Image (cartoon, rainbow, N blue to C red; front, side, top):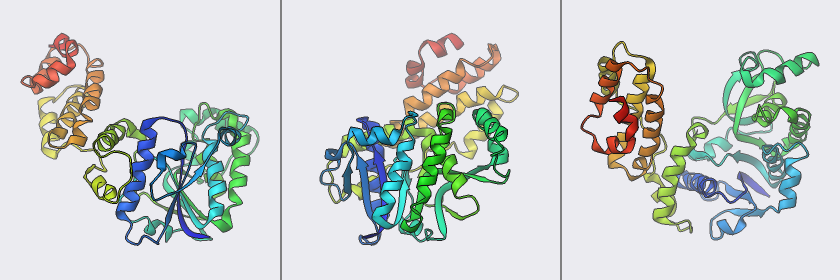
Length: 344
């Protein structure tokens, strides 16, 4: 039996998600110091996509995936089923969402997993805080009506990383039971799966993984753009130099410099906050001029800037100030077209 296993689940034929998984795997291999320290398992309905990759592939058929979704139609139930099946294959298993890149050797994460301690991506908020969020409203009301509300201090974790030992495999049966009880809330509260995991590890020791990984779930489009450039350039067929080549792709999106932020604060002094967002997104789009991967994100940043322009109050002075920032940037002016011209 395997000792340490990274576990991925990938289904469907979307290129962007396949790139996510492959790039995540490359980042794990790039940081791995000892090839014998862990193996990588990919559960997928497209096993041919990983032919030649240094991973163990478990082929999933349509019937299996359908049964994993269950009768409630909640797709994220498949993740809980994959963990339940995968955790039987090794002494320690760490499930990884595909939209994750490693910043350190995954061995550091395996060292945090034991029979007495679970591993999760990161703590997000307590039940006291989370239950007040709009998407939790109906769910929290139902639990309260059934006298099933947890303690306000219950910790709700992001399950982008979920690690446990084989000895704790039975936990996933209880997680699935909760998912099936709550599945009718899945349309509005798509994190039912990670809430169920959080309920079941309440009171147990939990380590977090966020210092070793970057889970980019909130900015997927930017990483999809960079991943596409990488695989278009190097191809998806595995070769030994591919993990090293992946090092050139930024693991974090850029931020505007302090000087840029102070300059915008001065130039847009007294203007509404969204006018500063316009300028911020515009400048972020300029950050990629010397990096082919960040350059692929330019249009995405500028799209965000243009959306914010549409929300700017029709104040002539505000628009004049904004236009002065990109007045000589013909590339942006051409990209923005009428949106900027109308504001001028």
